[in-house]
Amino acid sequence: MGKDYRQIIADTYASILSQENLGKVPDYIPEIACIDENKFGVSFTDLNGFNFGVGDFEEKFSIQSISKIFALSFTYEKLGEELWKRVDVEPSGTAFNSLVQLEADHGIPRNPFINAGALVICDVLLENCKNPKDEILLYIRELTDDESADFNEKVAASEMQNSFRNAAMANYMKSFGNIRSQPDAVIELYCHLCSIEMSCRQLSKSLLYLANGGKLPGSNKHIISLNKARRINAILLTCGFYDESGEFSFLVGLPGKSGVGGGIIALYPEHYCIAVWSPKLNPKGNSYRGMKFLQEFTMQTRESIF
Ligand code: GLU
Image 1 (cartoon, rainbow, N blue to C red):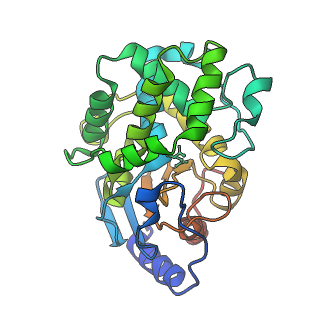
Image 2: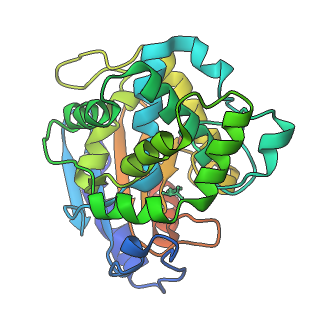
């Protein structure tokens, strides 16, 4: 008999809601600092199209670093294995915005999900696309089968004005030749990708292709090859949660990615995708309730990739 995901999600949601909501909304992006910190939504979508959501799952929020998955997937499909000459696939063990490893690593970021790596991906996008912003947006809209995912220009502008660390990284990597466009253009694109707003419902739909061997469920259209999908999932598992990636793997055991907007997305290959949003972050920068929810959810379902 199949599991009653609806019941498990509703019970887990109620249990987490009844517990303390610890953590802190990040204050370094002013437009995000003013969000209602008690927002909490969960959405589950499986490969057959069954969707179930609870709480604020239809409200859009800033997906922030979750957009790094779309940028990577789009770029990897375009460039193929060449991409790995410019960005590595190793967990960093440092904060998402750390500069510390770049000197020792000669300007090659440890992975595409830390800021330095995502800046390189943005640079590759600028080199290879006529209009990278529009192309990524179209890509996300195709994945969600929904036209409404969009940039929030206020958030993008607010981030651009506060992008001192990202600017430092982009300039530093440029000195090694691993950024080819002008750093300002790279940061402009990066901040726009971070500013994309989506709901948990849209997010839980958007990554189904990675749970489905690179194909859109339904149409079976290839978004990326099976091997590339497997590799992105491997990077999600090892690098998706900043320097808490080991912990997420240990406690949850699914490939996933978080963002400082409080979103987390995780997928169970060949089965489903689940997105959680709760803005307060733990000290490692991951959603406090999101982590707790997914830990409890996988305890209940007893499903992980291990
Ligand atoms: N816009 C954020 C930054 O670059 C993204 C961080 C994140 O979500 O990890 O600082």
